[in-house]
Length: 328
Picture 1 (cartoon, helix red, strand yellow):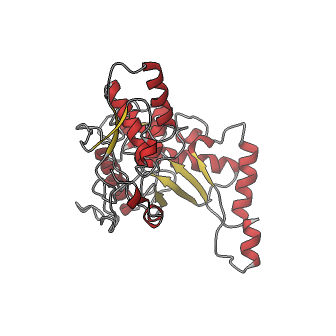
Picture 2: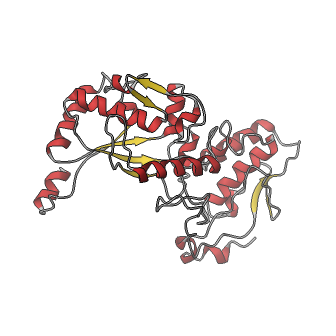
Picture 3: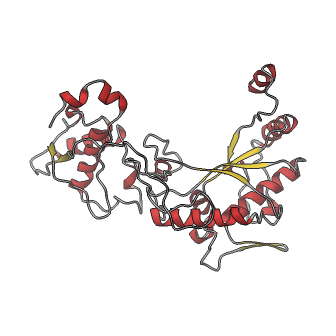
């Protein structure tokens, strides 16, 4: 339908495709074994045939942190400067990072389907900064540095050497309502923090400069106030837990994931974090700080590792006059 509409308006140069995640491929130990999953192979080939006839590329989304966990690989295999001895030998080809492993696995799958020369575009690739073990700002900086050095050299992969690979990084900012189906880290792909400041050094010119991208301008945080749990022991703990779970469901507690920034909080701190996230995501609406034991405070409850964020002002919030009517 999209292709038909574009052709109707004389836009033949605009390509039409659809992105695929790496789970469309079989779990294999070597790229040469690459193929599409049996349960979807017929549909995949049908779709690939249509994309090929209309001149579109095959778009693959790669999340290295997900793949190394799924395959049981050493996490170092995620990085282009792999500091471990882990590698995959496939005939005369040697794979030292998960990107080239997955890329050539797809090349093998396309070749077996009869489309070995089809263009491949990476629709999403990146490294999260929270929500999972190894998800950190330091590792994100390391990943992108290696990725961009690799792209700049145009080395390609063993099955497609000396290629300039097109790809899109994910993402500019965190998405605190993203699906958690693949993991809590799915909400923490952002290169920028909520307040528009870059999280780490990343050089989009691919010249390997020690530089951070320009911070966003005009970002204004809401007042320094937090909604926290008072910690009193006379509260019914069962009801407190219910409110805690409700607050998490209504906001974002992905920082509680194993190995994440807030996975070592006490019970009182966990409840406070959940209460505060709900309060902040509702633009500091005092009615959202009405859970059991909830109280407003101007004392920052953050810990050295776990940040209790403050919401930023949105245009809708200011235009609606809410800022003037919801003073602490």
